[in-house]
Length: 563
Image 1 (cartoon, rainbow, N blue to C red):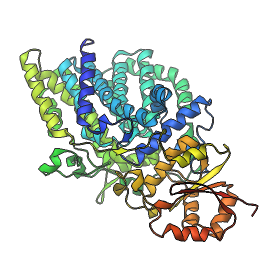
Image 2 (cartoon, rainbow, N blue to C red):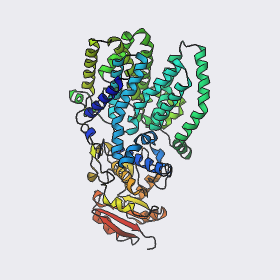
Image 3 (cartoon, rainbow, N blue to C red):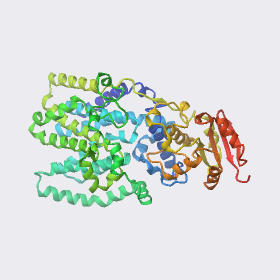
Image 4 (cartoon, rainbow, N blue to C red):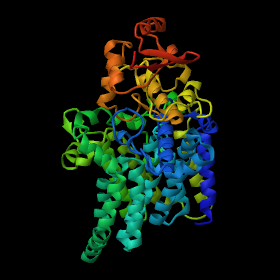
């Protein structure tokens, strides 16, 4: 098995590049889309730069000034930053670092599922296919623009050491269980929240028939590791704990979760880049494409009949994980019917931090992949037949998930971003800035229409993409700014954007003075709702606004409070 793994890893790298082309061949200056991935590039860069300065301003980032603890408004990306730090150190290119991480999640996910399936079945070929099912599933490919949600490569290892501990015992196994759980939860809070109830299914199933001694051993070891584990988790999750303490009103209601819950039809939905969309299957983007494939579903269901007797319990356990995850993914209601998510929400407070129940779907794929591996372990006995069956299954699966021309957008690297940001970099570190035009978040055109626009094509109506780029460009100047982008826009951003929506006004100037803004960067070519010439004419009525620099259609004004 150990000799097989390097070849398997290389094979999955080749598959990754092939499935995700042409995006996968343009990783130095392109990203999967123009919003969240652009923001994640800033996030990685910010974390890395803070690390170099001994953690200074790690939580209180430069965005959404004067709001504090702004790193916690989205996933902190702690685990991802650790992994890409060598790339950032060598290249200072967060776009490249992010892309390498994104692509690496696919072979790593395949490898992790292989290891889990091999432990459970002992079959190399069945485990290899199980890894491919999991790594290249539609729900994973659909999350390519969401770096945290794509970080599901560690989840099989959590279940691996959970099962190993229950079956074998040993402090070493429970420590590894905690390590992989910690990496998962610091990759995204979603997985940490989801793992707890779904792991409970595995624990109950594995403990059945084990006897009182196994239960007592588990309680003893759990108590030994409890205190250090809690301390580490509190440190790792401190930004979220602080956010909840400072803003107890920040919580996701059942109504919030309904908007991004999966629909039953999502499990028949593929990406627009899938050739199956031309064959009649519905196509969508973002959280909607959850198609598990007919191949995987049939093999998983067949495990109830075809799995060896010694693997039958494993098949049933992980099939139940898939079913439970699927039920949770559809959210609290289906019509007037209360779903399991509704009742879990009432007794499990951590769900109040979850906005997208549809992301439970990755556990559907995980459970089905393990169950399918138990089927394949039975029908793929060593020999020529195993190669034939494995090849046929793989070809059918790839036919179902293959993508045609994975999209991307070209992104300026930090070495060739607009010159105006280099100018801001040369200004005093304590300078506070704002970039205009600035509109309230709710005045933005639909996010879907902004995803694949180039930066040069963005206008004031593309609020999400503009703010993501402005946040990313701040990786160069690192000045505190009223602008920002994250998974949550704080009230202070809304307040500022309302006041500055029709800048310049007396109210706007007064607000900027109170927030100690020194530089106002105006992008003339982003104005479309009114001619920039009208804005420039109004600016002349305010002597406190002094133009200090111009770079093409980018104008920098200094707010001189002495005038």
